[in-house]
Structures are given as C-alpha cells and as structure tokens.
Length: 227
View 1 (spheres, one colour):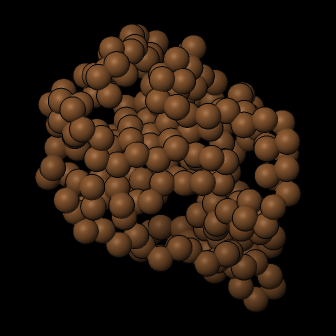
View 2: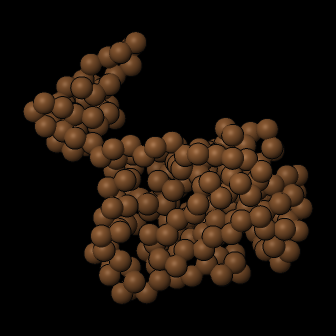
C-alpha cells in the first residue's frame, strides 16, 4: 500500500483533502470501497462490516468508508450504514484504479440484475430494512482492505468481480486477531392480516399492511414495535 498511501481523498462533509496513509498511521484500518453511496447492497454490506466496531474496539482499529463520488453521501450518513462518520470520496477514482478495483460493463450490470443471486441479495437487504437507489456511477465495483499499522502489510483484501460479491466479515475479524460470529440473518418480513414483522420507520405514520409497512403499531417499554 506504499503508493496508495500518497493518494488523497476528500471528506464528504467538509470536502477537505485527506492523505490516505494517515488512515493507518496509528493503527490497523478497515477501508471499505463502496460502488456508490446509494447502492442498496453496498449499504447492507457496510452495516455488516460495521458490526465489527464493538468486538474490535480494544484493538485501535480505524473504520474508513470511501465512495467513488460524493453523490448520495447525505443519505448514507443519515441511514447510519457505516460505523462512524469517517466517510470520504475519490473524485477522480485514481485510488480505485491503483488498487485494481474493476468497472463492470453494461451487460454485467443489467444482466446481473436478472439473476437469482441478485434477488436473493435484495431480499436480504430489504429484510434488514435497507433501501437504495440507482443514482450515480453504476459501473464501478468496490472492495475492502484491512491494512496493518504503518501500511507495510495488507492483512485482508477483497475486490468485487461483480456487484453481488461481498467481503467475508468473519475473515476480516480473524485477520485482526478476533474470532467473530455474525448475528443470524433476519427472516424475510411477513405482513398479512394476521402478522407483520417489519418495524415501522415512523411510528406516527398510518399503518399499512404490506411489505415495508405494518398492520399495527404498539409500544413496548415506550418503543414502537410492529405486531
């Protein structure tokens, strides 16, 4: 990562330049390269990787997310898809190129949308309450790198071959010396006349009995839950 250390990215909120090497100057760093900030599957992966923040909190691990463009960062931050607010973008995609993060073609993007793997993945994201959009550069692929302190060693690396690929969270944790078992995936929400397991995003909204809505809203210990 010696050459990559000299690259500069921009903070999404302030637009200030930050040298990439500073990310791992004081400790190991997880650097997640998103396809787009609005990418639904990327948002879901980001949430999964962010679950490592707690088990890794004693190891001085820095969590950094980088997008290929600034578009959509506000919603990404608002949705709390990342472990913190260390979110940047690579306006000319030079760092993406340096690290060998590929770009898909038109056939790869739209052909991939028709596969069972894609729809299974979309189902998982919806079960987790994650949505997205198609705004921005839909052809860029992403990746994830775990870089040791000082940048001399890459502990884990992952590059997408297509947009359904995603990093192994357990392998990421193991590369940093931690055993981690992800929480079981949430079952697909069911909403009909008898049951609804999808939480309401807004407890004051009118309940709707359909996927993404809720048949009834009630409160347990003061918190709104679906019934």
